[in-house]
Amino acid sequence: MNSVLYDVPGPKAKARNWIYTGVFLVLFALAAWWILARMAEKSQLDADKWTPFVTDSRVWTTFLIPGLLETLKAGAIAMAIALPLGALLGVGRLSDHAWVRVPVGTVVEFFRAIPVLMLMIFGSAFLVKFTPVESEVRPLYAVIIGLVLYNASVIAEIVRAGVLSLPRGQTDAAKAIGMRKGQTMFHVLIPQAVTAMLPALVSQLVVILKDTALGGSLLGLTELLAANRQISANYSNTIASLVVIALIYIAVNFALTSCASWLEGRLRKSTKSTGTVVQVAAVGDLATGRAV
Image (cartoon, rainbow, N blue to C red; front, side, top):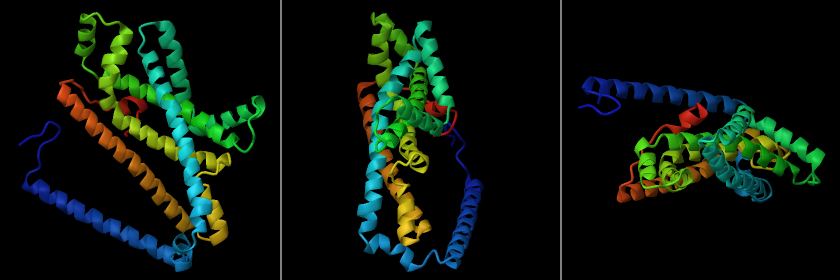
């Protein structure tokens, strides 16, 4: 029995897979044991380094929760701006008019090629030189500027790849009933491409949320990861605080991807019920050149 993508493994292949799985689990257990042993040698597993997260509420109310809220605020604002801006840039790259397509393509390629940290630093310098923004909120604004410029460019490529992944017949059918290019794009192509684009878009939203940590490391944004320095200074538990912060990031990003998976399921169910044809493509790979 064959699948579209691969041959279904037979008994010998299944046995090999089980062996490989067992070997991997053994190696993983040995690596985990070695890491824990090294941490124990350095007194990183002592109870006094971990109990503050359970017994001292100030760790949460003074450091972790305010840092998490700052991270969510920066990420949410950047997402709210980058998503529509990226969609507009993506549509611009698909324009039939060269005077629209070429400048938009230049902007997208320019900001997509610059590291997001450099964009944050440039944003901070711009705010210092040319705006009256106060120093207390300047790191937040600089982080948002960098995240929006970079991620809007990436989202533009995701939108372009998602629209191009649709069957050509969708455009031909829209033209056949007299729809203009703009009507075809916004009423036919983009609504269908959303389902194909959603996994890549969600991955990019997760990247936005994680990249807020860059602002804390260099610009002084009091986000979640920056709370590690304050916690370590007060409780001398750098490793423990980093582990807890990592778990918080995992929980937040898992909640984000779970909501997106639920939304994707609803969209696919709606698409099937209306008979709309959507060709799902690896738009993340097409747009960003990396797996998502």
